[in-house]
Amino acid sequence: MLELETQNTNPDTQTSQPVESVEVDGLWVDQATGVVIGEVEPVADEGAKLSEDEAERVLSRMLFHASRKASAERALRKASAAFCTRHTAALEAFEDEPETIALRAQIANADRVGAQADRSLEFYEATYKPSLGELALRKLANAKARTLSLLNGQVSLRKVPARLTVADEAQAVAHCEAQGWLDALKKSVLVSKVPKEALDDIAFAEGTGFDLTAERDEVTIKLGIAA
Image 1 (cartoon, rainbow, N blue to C red):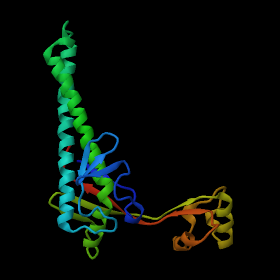
Image 2 (image 1 turned 135 degrees about the vertical axis):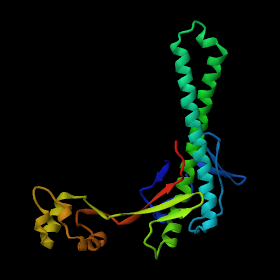
Image 3 (image 1 turned 45 degrees about the vertical axis):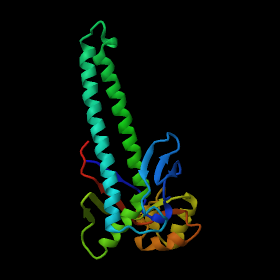
Image 4 (image 1 turned 30 degrees about the vertical axis):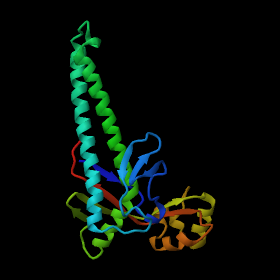
């Protein structure tokens, strides 16, 4: 099952499209290859919010490219297996036979199509996943469910707890001692012993020796396509 995951769902910290793509006549084009990787959707503007209809359009594009990628991968496996079978036969004229030439072309074509589909999926993920995540948060705000089911896929949310790490050992030790968090101190700082109720204070304080990754929602998009 194809699943696309992201580690950051905050729209304020994500770009609206990959820097290597350029808009040409309503299409996003990969600057490096000149290949069309997606269509410009009305939700591409920074700060815009997706409606369910717009989300369905985006997911339908992703579903198309996911299907194309899966088909290419199956064709690649089939052509590669046939090629290996012929090669094992050790025919003298193996390299020059029409069937061999055709198989080589099929392998190259499937590889290219799969790579293009993969590039398009990466584009849609980078461009629209923050908006899809925001839509899911909005629609599921008063629900126990954490998955928004649409016709063309699912947008799932998973709560990722805040994570505290030591940025400066000496400062962290001094801060723990000053706050009386002696259980957090051994030969090194044990962030698991820092009181959870202190995380908000640490987030806004300077010179604590800690880095805090805030609690967030992680988004997973499921398109229902088996590779």
